[in-house]
Image (cartoon, rainbow, N blue to C red):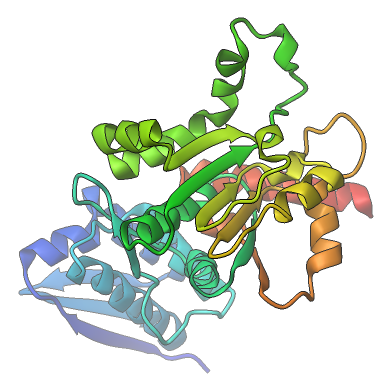
Length: 321
């Protein structure tokens, strides 16, 4: 039978306490509400009281949050929610939170994996020549892939970064958009521009773009090419046809790496099969190719994004019964 206990943790000082508690003590209140414990601080000592299993779970979560603080990062509500979700599923790891640094932005801000799913995704990209990152919006699939591409480029592991997307979005047609071809495809490629811009900075990005060592282009531009010594990212891959996916994958040349990202619940193809779904079926056991699946628990956007994804998933499951 669970008994009521009191646990104590020592804080390193007022700054860590402020980071841990969050604005208006919101972080601590979230832990108290979800685990039904009482948390108070006095003289740099944190007191956690409640039923033994819940108090121990709170201690485990707080220790992991302290790791974030000690690494110099701000503790966010998303960090707290993520650990609470893991606790409820009895999957809290005894190891550290996934804080592995991938690279730094031009402003010196470190880019790190923020969830265990993201950590697994990053490790797969470092290890395998071809990685498929499959999951819902907001899980960092594209941004982390671009960060790895910049890291490889800076370390001279590749000489080019190539980012591409199929020009199919939400039933719209390119012919109805104003402007020349570049004007028509730019909106589809904007998320890729933005990720590179944020990491590299405007001057470096535009300089590398002019030199041709960075290329952002629609998927159709890849046909007939062999891409050597490159880090190649195919984004929104759920909107490729099987033929397009095969065409893209066979562009891979010597010294290159590929990352293919997509969300199989957001297919905008006007009929027909998704190349991403077919690739998963055909290539699942091919050595050197890794499939990583991210979930709503890896979403690092607003809390409501997680709820929205979960609601749609539940609705889909209900209709399939």
